[in-house]
Length: 227
Length: 227
DNA sequence: TTTTATAAAAATGTAGATATTTTGAAGGCG
DNA sequence: CGCCTTCAAAATATCTACATTTTTATAAAA
Image 1: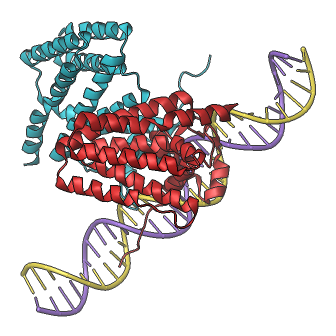
Image 2: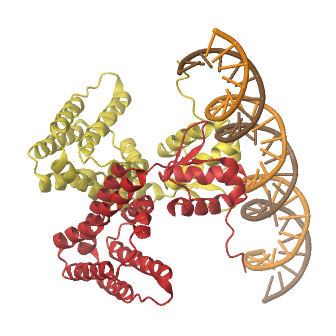
Image 3: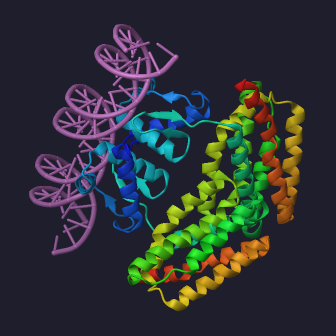
């Protein structure tokens, strides 16, 4: 009938740039030369500037007038602040979800938790980490969805994007030991239990702690790298 | 020494467009014709598209590929969700501010509260509403600042921008009676009292209720207009 | 070493070319 | 007659190429 996807170049430039920044293709603080980007993505300046403007609004890129764009810098202090903000926001969302979530919400959490717990190493650790991460996101997404607020979820997504670069450091560093995975699994199980029991204070505390655990590891990776 | 402000056209296009959208110069859902914008702001398509891309990221504008841009639609359901999200976020921020704020934070709140309480009608109601609104924002900003999290404050700003169009309806509608102003003043005083007493649950509840009060009025304005 | 002059590189903006969507009229069909 | 298609013209969005302005790098002079 219609073309499957008919978006303009700015949109795909945005998606590709964002992906590359989050994946660490460009180091934090690196200058994003127009000429280089034009070559790499085979696009004109127009669409690129559109994409960069959006990324500026999302704080993944900073613009200095007449001096182009650079990847937003990373720092330990930002690491701490962003994880702190995210943990507290997620705590709030969990409390609301417990107050507002219905049976379908509960069911979806159970479903996603089950899928996550059953991730098996079938085709190499690289592939498996990818699957695990996707299902992990889906699990937490299902929990958050219960809050029922489009705008809170939107704000949550925004912080997720901003935290992703730091989280990527963690995923790369942590050669995922099966103990760590087992530990996560237990935390998730306990969290599900608290959610279904509708114990808001406990669930909120648990998720805040759950989300803060990577911070110390990432901090050390960053300090080590900076030397 | 140097030029005071040397930003590119995209930046000023962004500021002007945002201002006009928030102020209701363009009705919600209206198509933003490139030709019209070019004429109105005397700019080329390049800078305009940059600005619009940023506004898309901030959810004030929506883009449909190959079909240009339009002002983000407004609806009663969004009104309710956005105020709900904002109230809960602000409640969280207040709790954190009470836990983390120092003496300078307390002092700044008192200062801003005082300035706000002493707004006098000196040069017409238009001017006075403007002054009151600015000081009101400063007062709430001072409270929020105590949470100490750059990212939470950034997320708060984002929601403030999104809510501003609805709030503007309220400001326009409410021919500010001195009773309403007096009522606000009392709410503010009580809030300051709870903050200084470091009573987190009470302050959080108070601010949530304080922020939700305009909703019913705005809803009625919107329902009346849609008919 | 610091300053200044100059050349190269880069960012930014505009005009116009291209592609897409919308409009509106004409024609066909129930 | 009302309603749906079809199709061309007009309007619109989008993109690129090039012109302009600004910054950065380089080298000579103080």
